[in-house]
Length: 454
Image 1 (cartoon, rainbow, N blue to C red):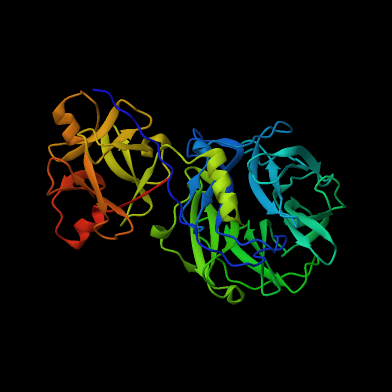
Image 2 (image 1 turned 135 degrees about the vertical axis):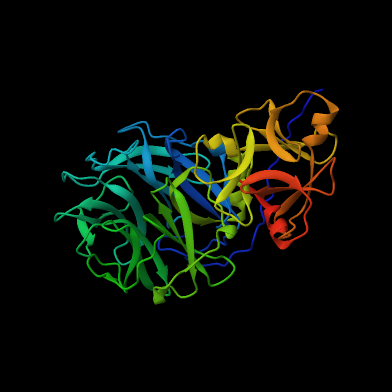
């Protein structure tokens, strides 16, 4: 019996954005409708490590669609031939410059004074690749970012380097991201500070950074962009060891989101929110509300227009696979392990165990779940337990491996799956193992509800 696997792009809600300079250096004329994220990838045992520039898009800045099947869109060819910590800057003319740490892997002792640089008109192609030397000190140039300093008529490149015995945020000024001025200390709180990220609100400049002595995120502020003018004002924010702060303004409200990337375990993003950045207080965002791209690490997020969103999806495409997040355990995803279907805490290895092609139902209606890394096998129920099994071509297998998607039983914005041949039973987890069971209680409904994403 032949099987056709259909790949479909997820329709992204295009939200009309406000016209605003959300960050220094953002072109002011654009009306934004979504976001682009840049990142590199790692997984717990590094099987998913790729040190090229990856891109994802989002309509709400919370749930992300990886592009190019979560493969890189461009990879460095000089220096270490790898990147970490990419940053996407929209320049004053509306085009983009991409900066990144020149480091492939995790050799933190590498003293690299250079950063990778690309130019792009639309993030669909990348030109002018070069490495730019920022200093001649016996130290690194980590996590470069950039912003427009109108008082100087130049861009500032900020990055982390050891100066005075500990990491500080350094700055070089440039007009073209090719020739740069002499390095100078931009911010030094008196202890190791890395991963500087600038965000402007109501004319006040907020510099978010990682306290590298204890793995917390803090913020400093200044009414100017002058080196040495920033003063720390916030309390610490963290979820375990947290780094790589990013602040993203909602396009539809006054909410701002603070993203942080944990480094133990590998690359789990957490988000906090506030409507008053100046207060320094952030409230955790429910993990049900956001989903990071698979294996993503140390990201950058910038607003984009509807045309740019459409162009990126057209150029690079959405994944041909999905992941399913558990509603009541949103840190867990549906995966197979030893042929048993489970929901396990992200991240895990093999990371491919959580990737599914949601294909037309083998029984002729509904859907079936085909494993990406074992493509001959599908999720099916057997004695009401759900297992990964090879398609034997039988009508019984087809029926057992087919489910009807319905509005989520615990949340209509999510999805539940009713068994094709036992329509009084739904796909659910119990003790973190998947089954098909009748659903009657609130807990049952939560166990049977999933977010289909990436």
